Amino acid sequence: DLLRIQFYLIPDLQELGNLICKYQYNKNIQFHAEQKYGKDLFQGQPVYIIKNVLCKNKKTGNIDLVEYKYHLNSDKQYEAVFLTYEVALLAWQKFVIQNDHYRLPSRPNILVHNLEDFLKLYEQRKSIETKNLLLIPRQKSYKFIKNNITQKSQQYLIEAFTKKFSRFQIITKRIIWSLTSRQPINW
Image (cartoon, rainbow, N blue to C red; front, side, top):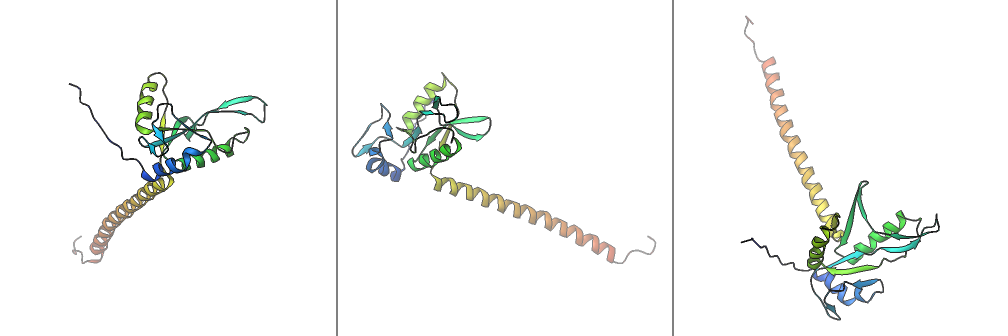
């Protein structure tokens, strides 16, 4: 018997509400063919993928297929999956600035899917082509985690310094005590 693990995700209700009430009516939004959604429903946790776009290269005059890739460092590219629409738009704005040699649209075309089904499709596709995947949360979550990690690392440094310094203090006091205390005459 194979051990099967089941997990259930509780969607971000604020993002889900925004998608149902606002975002789904935007012209740049397209839902995945197998996604279950409607005027007042959406199945699962929404994820947003920036689609490739054909656009003119200002330098060469050629029409190129431009893929949105996320670069954490110069040698690794990631397929970005955004957990919020707003962060996808912010990332696109930065991408447009970095790629000013293309005539990119002000808003990207975005494919909306749910996280569970996306991961299933990604796992099937991964066997065909290997890609690195990066899930990008809302900015507020990222800042919260970053601040907590920074605070904990600062606390660790202070505690480590205090321990080392107190050991140094004790050793220094012992040395001074031994130098200033009376020494035997036949030393």
